Image (cartoon, one colour):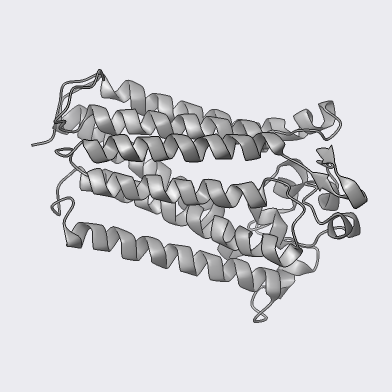
Length: 305
C-alpha cells in the first residue's frame, strides 16, 4: 500500500458499510434524507433500504435485527458465565461480553440506517469506534489472563483491564469526534474529500487486527503447550473462521450484494451475523478450557489450576 493510500478510507466507504464512514463528507442526498446511504457519497452503490415518509429511508434493517439478537444472546452468555463460579478469568471475559453489547447497541444507530440527526449519528459513531477498539483490547488481555501472571478476578486484574479499555475508548472516541466536528485543525483534511485519517486507520483497522492475532497466538500456545489439549482448538479455529467470513462479506462481497438487490441490503447484515456466531464460539472455547462447578457438555476436559 502506497504512502498516499495509507490511512485512506475512500475505497472502504465506497464498497462497504462501515461506521467510520459517517465521519467523512456526506452527499447532499444523505444530509437531506437524514440517513446513511452507504457508498452514495463515495461513488459506490447507494444503500436505500426501506422508503419512509418525507424522503427518508431505513437501511440495514437486517443489521439492526441481528444486533438486537446479538444483545439478547450476549446477555444470556453473561448469565451463563456468572454461574461458572470457579472458572478462571470469568470476570475478565464478562468485561469482553459487556464491551460486545456496547458495540452492538452502537451499531444499531451507525451501521443501521435509522433517520437520525447527523450530530446524533456522529456521537454514536464515535462511541462505536471507541467500543470496538476497547473491546478487542480487552479480548487480547483475556488471553494474557490465562497465563495467570496476575491472579484473575482480583481488583488489580480487573482494574488494569478496565482502566486501559476506558483509555482506548475515550482516546479513539475523541479522535472520531474531532474528525467529525473539527474541534481542532488536526484532522481537518479528513473532511475535504480525502477521507484520510491515519490515527483512526491505525486504531480502527490495524490495532484490532493486531489484538486478534495476538489473542489467537497466545490462546493457541496456552491450549497446545500449557494444557496439552487439542479439542478446544476446534472452537478457537471456528471462531476465527466465522469472523473471517464476516469480514469477507463486509469488505469484498458487500458491494455486489448491494448492486444485486438494488440497494436493499448489503454485506453488513451478514458481517453482524457472523461476528455474533464468532463471539458465541469464543465463549464455548473459553468455557471448554476453564474450571467449572456445574456440568456442561463441552469438548476438552482440561482446566486451569
